[in-house]
Image (cartoon, rainbow, N blue to C red):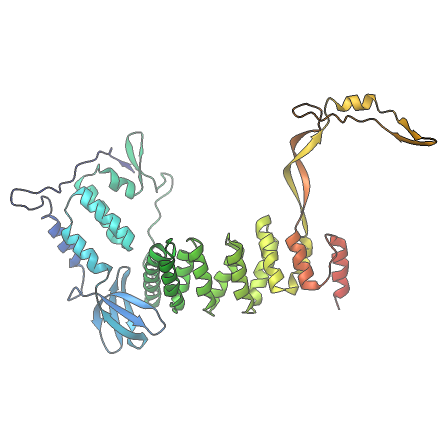
Amino acid sequence: MRLRRSRTVPSCRRSDPFGRRRGCAPLLILASFALAGSTAPSLRADVLRLANGGFVEGEIIEETDEFYRVRTILGTVTVAADAVRLVERGPTVLDEYRKRLADACDTPAAQAELAAWCAEAGLPVERRKHLERALALDPEYEPARKALGHVLVAGVWVDGRSRVEKPTAAPPSEPADEQARLMVAIQNQWRRRLRAIQTNLLDTSIPRLAEDGRRKIAAIDDPLAISPMAEVLSQGALNSRSALVEALGRFTVDEATLNLGVLALVDPDTGIRRRALSLVVRRDDPRVGEQFVRALRTDNDALVRRAAEGLTVLKYAPAVPDLIGALRVQRRKVVEVIVPSYFAEWQESYNGAQRISLGGRTYVTYRPRVSVAIPGAFVAPETELQLREVTVFRTEVLEALVAITGQNFGFDEAAWRRWHEEQKP
């Protein structure tokens, strides 16, 4: 898609002689249009507290003895009345959005600013609407172009997210199933709340705030929060990831075990990996051991070492054959080796044995060698970097074998295999 060249226009946020901001009145039409599609009789915002610890935030547009119909930022969902523990009437991000919408000028800069706020607030549909409005006001407005993914190529704006030879993929459609829509809405709200906890509390340098963040994470008991929790907190600093491990440890469902097992392999911090492993061990879930064995079969040395560390803790006996096979591996690596030097030829010229008397009939015989070692000279052995085939011995794998079997044949793969064959009935 070819778009026109960009130029930046000044904002119209100036006062006229009567003290009004120019350019704001036309936005009332936009605001009315934005709200016209709503079937809600009022502008209330509500939070439905669910019996399982989750919540749905939005506007109740229909309420009966059997269900609530709630308009959320991801669409309208239906919540069974018997799943609702408490209904709280209060402001949400939608109320804040309406306030900002009413206050914003109908200018490219104001619309782009409102779009940026929508992105932070988790309102993707509204974000795009305001970026497109900015371009409708000025097709050459650069900030909106860049926010939409457009790039300037040879003086022409091009949609950087599309390819000429392939049609643009259709945007993902809203889940057709009512329960799926409800789940997506709940998880999206958890995702926004977790990001706020991480940014404002957990990843700060103030211990009091960080501890408050840990308490808030520990209080979460909704299983639907597990996926957004793992997604958000695993990308945070050490404190966020530590809070994630402890939170996952309080859930007994498969999704918690799954994410704990993955953390035990991928987290860069040894302490967090070990804590995740200790929580996994308590579950006595053989599927974790099976996945660690599969990791042994990969060609990633770091992953193999971490899987072996995990199997050491799990003491997963079926892993023995794969551990034996992973004891050592051939790798092509750059190594530093000694290479012949010019002065080695001197030594070859004087390689005849010389016999030295120690007194009486005691003699020693040896060959002369160059022993001069003046700093900066060329006499000392010279080295160079060469690509060589080397054998990598994996000590973590050996430790796992010893922990599981109680035997120790070192890195002698043949001895391990003979012993393993002897154990078969």
